[in-house]
Length: 522
Image (cartoon, rainbow, N blue to C red; front, side):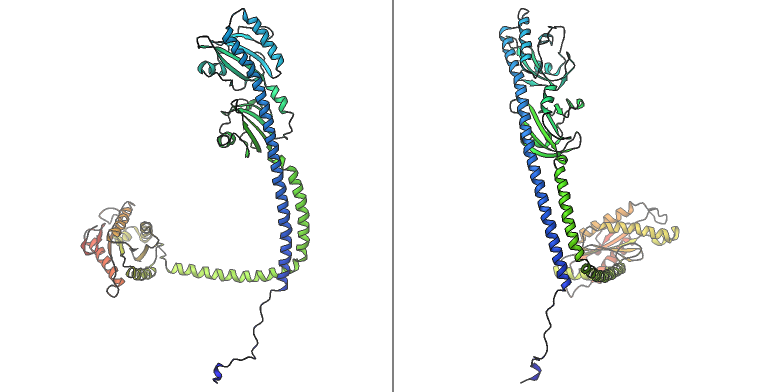
């Protein structure tokens, strides 16, 4: 038997790695603490969701009550108006009928507690009869919104106008009106019922909506009719651009949404409904902060208890954690040192590949890139282009303006050259002195010519003063060439030489121009 292949059975196998007991202990403590925290977080969050769900139901029920009350109130007034319209259109208006009609209006106001008054106006807005104890006929309401609406619209439905102050009492009222016609169908006048604002306020004050809750009734065009808390400045305000009208009502006639009020900045749970029979929208909104106040208090108490328990468990394992922390700290410092060295090496490598004056790639990086792109072009049978750029009369520029100005000039030109490339694979480099090159993989002569000409024009339009140049400003000349390299027939140096010859041609033909290899002009 060949002894070289014999297996040494006396050699012990390596023992399996084991986790330190401290790691297991810390893991157990963390697991217990996290379980307690997550469990308490879930219970707390669930309680919050339940509280919000109950509040949404309460807001929805409140909105339903408010909408029904608004409907009943408006319907009672409108029913009286329907009877008045029928009587006026059948019996007409005469001085003989006015006293009897006056008594009827007074009786209807006494029967319906929500009514502030009933009024009849002729086609010119003059007072014909009303529910006031003493019949006055010297007023005119032709300038009121409801009168102008009926005068200009043939619609026979009830019209609810914005809140106004009564001329007779000075109180805020909500108006419900209808048009009546003459026997020939022409506009005969308006019958009006005014509803006391206090009637709504008294009803809304029965509900517990907290300190910052809100109830309001508005027209479908966004005009507020009334609001709790009552604010005289908000009456008649248009809120059509606020979330309820702008975002939610167009999609659903009823619903419950949470958003921040555009009037007072309070975030509320809003339940809204749009009435079918009348152009009204009601909303009942409860403050989200007030709703969650009790939940927050309980959450803080429970969280404090869990925090104390977690703290006790953490205290028990603190000694283990300290030891592990010291070890991790040492390893972290070593890792930071290694990362710093790697970053420093990367920076040095980048600096070694970058020209210090212009910020472009240096000659070394260009040579490496040219070799790589030349090989890639041979493999892919693709064109490789090179632009060689030289600053015209740069020696004279240094003689006239000094080397510091010359350096600034090169920096400005280099920025234009760097901006001239647009693809990630393109490379701009300082070739030497005032010469710069642009390597364009996958580009033919026409493409390179366009890039070179754009750069030449951009440098010319910098208008850097140069009295030693015939044009009076700094200009550049460029030579380009491009071909598809063939393995074992072409070398990278050939591309440089061809572009250099084209550059020499541009210099000899007057500068400030672009020339292409083989004598093709840009």
